[in-house]
Every structure is written in structure tokens, then in C-alpha cells.
Image: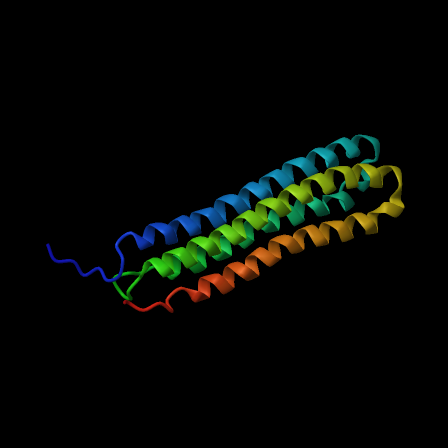
Length: 165
């Protein structure tokens, strides 16, 4: 059987696994952050309905985490074309680590945003001076996912630099 496949035949499995991990874990973080902070917004909205729109910031920040995973998943999946260019295990592992870095950072950031968002919007309803502090904490939590995105892009760019032995 002749094949036009070049490179390691199992390598794309790891690459696609990286793309899936980036999207799945980032979306899990986004979902958790949205749900947890959404509960806080709903609870706070009963006491102070005029603050609901101001308190929607954690929900929006959590939603952005899924976009980070989508970006890495698209970058990885467009880099996997073993019929056009050789795709080795090095490339598959680079894409896997890229997806895991972005996805798990997004999951951790989503958990942080959810917990801070829930407690923050409830506290903001009782003491409006806490709003700026809550936003700063949310920004630092979001930065964790941004670090994962940056590292994911760097790791993904390493794919394609391997050569056959």
C-alpha cells in the first residue's frame, strides 16, 4: 500500500488533541466563570437592580476565555496538513503542549474570575468603593489566560521546525 503521507502517522493525533484541549479547557473555564459570577449578579440584582449592568463585567471577562482557546485551536488545526508538509512527532507534541498551555491557563483563569466575580459583585452591592478593587483582581485573573495564550502561540510556532533523522 503506497501512501502520500509524510512524517509520523500518529503525530496528527497529538496535534488534534492539542487543538481540542485548547478549546475544551478554555470553554470549561469560560463556562464556570460565567455561571459562578452570573449567580452572584442574579443574587445581587435582587437587592440592587440598578447595579446589574455594572456588575456584568465578570461575565464578559469570563466569556473572553473561550475565544483564547478558539484562537489556539484554529492556529493548531491549520498547522496540521501532513500531505502538504511532513508532520513529525515533534510537531504533534508542540501542538499538544500549545493547546494544553492555553486551555489549562484558561480553565484556571475562569475559576478565578468566577470566584472573584461572585464575591465581588455581592460585595460591591453593599460597598460601592470595592468596584475598582474587584476590577483589578479580575484583570489579573484574566492575565493568567493571556499568558497561556502567548505561550501557546510560541509553542505552536515551534511546530514545523523539526527534521527527520
